[in-house]
Structures are given as structure tokens and as C-alpha cells.
Length: 308
Image 1 (tube, one colour):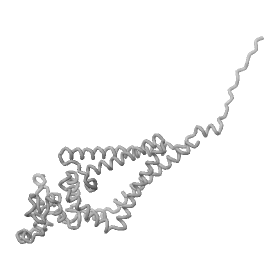
Image 2 (cartoon, one colour):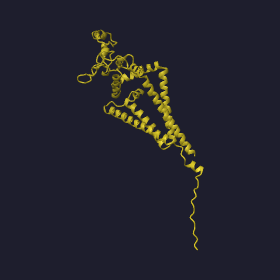
Image 3 (cartoon, rainbow, N blue to C red):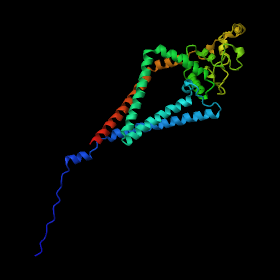
Image 4 (cartoon, rainbow, N blue to C red):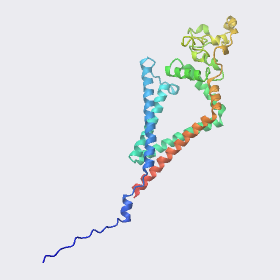
């Protein structure tokens, strides 16, 4: 007789503890992709800022103004160049965070964390300086920065538009406590010796200083509304001109232009919106700390995964 063999039974062999540890992962998908999302968003913002800055620089070049970099002031007060530099920094730092998180690269994550720490310390240092030495910071802003802003007003169209926007939105004129008298530092608005200044804008201020620069009937901006304001206020160091223009001093500049400096207006606005400004500052700081925590956590998880 033919022997019939019974089918063999399949015996389940349990996976060893060491094999389970070898297949386990210590990298949290939530941490990884949350960090990637944040940095991808900032990467897009950085790219947009680079585009805006480069467009402004190209526009300056095409209009014949060019990009002058003779000293540090030319960099600090060139709006297009500053926007492009800030955009480039955000672009490359966030790119390191994106690729570091996506590819689980600890070198890029360490570079990203270092950059965030440097930014946070710089912001903290500026905040401490403003809080501990407010008078010195205000003196620096109303001195060196005021001079450069005023003197370069006509040289850079982007800076000019920025100053006009600030003066219109904050209802101010000039930057320091001297208000509209600051504009005498500009060669076009200079009023310390009008007989030597051939500019048609001499002894005036930009239209953005005017209280009623826009004609309500036509909707057009009267760019000549600030002409002669400094002369009417007697802003001149030439005694002959003071005597000659004495009949013009009957007009009060307060009737035509804003007589508060933009730094003082900005301080008043911050005091009125203190809780909003403080909330934004704390929110930005917490966001930076949160992203730094994600980066260090992901870096630690990657190192732990490598060790196993």
C-alpha cells in the first residue's frame, strides 16, 4: 500500500526583540513635517522678498540712478537692497531647515538651529538696548539716521516713497523733534541760504507733510502744497532774508503741515497700541523658540535612530 504523508504544519516563529528594535523608528512624522511646513512657508516668503528687492534694484538701474555702495549708509538706506538681503537670508536659512527636515540631515539642522539662535540673540539685544537706554537709542535715530534719510530723499525713489508713506500714515513731518526743520538738511529743501539754492523747492517740505495734500474735488495730489513752509516759519540763518521775508511770517506752519516728528509719532502710536505690539513681539519670539525646539528635537531623534 502507498503511504500517505500528512501535510506539514506551519509553525509561527516569533520575531525577536532585537529584530523589532532594528525595524523601529524614533523619528516623529509630526515633528518632521511640521518643521518642513513652517520652513517651506518662510522659504516662499524669502523668495518673494528677493524678487521684490531685485525688481526695485533693476528699476533703479534702468532709471539711471544706479546702485551706489560707497559706504555703509548706502546699504542701510537703500530699500530695494535691504529687502533683497533680508529675503536672501530668510530664503537660505529656511531652505536649510526644509531640506534638513525632509532628508533628515543633521548638519543642515545644526546650521539652521545656529542661525535661529543668532537671530534670537540679536533681537533680544536690540530689545534690551531700547528698554535700558531709550534716550541714547532715540538720540542715535534722530541724529545719524535722520541725516541720512533726509539727505538721500531725492536720490533713491524707493526711499522717497517709503518716507512719504510714513509721513502720510503717521501724520508727521521729518524724523526728529525739529519736525519740518529737518528738511533743511536736504539740498533741494535747504533754507539756510536760499539765495545760493537754485532749487524751486527751496525752503519747502515734501507734499507728504501737508495736512491737505489731496484736492477733494479732483482727487489729485498737490505736490507744491509744502513750498515755502520753512520760509514762512522763519527757518533761515541769513538775517537779511529774515528781514526781507518778515511779511511772510504771518502764516503758521501748523495750518499747512504736520509739526510732529515721525519718531515721536511712532512712539505715540506704540503707546496707544502697546498690547498689540507686545503681543506681536511675544508671538514672534514664541514662534522662533518653537521652531528651534522642533529642530533640536528632530536632530536628537535622528541621532538616536542612527545609534540603533
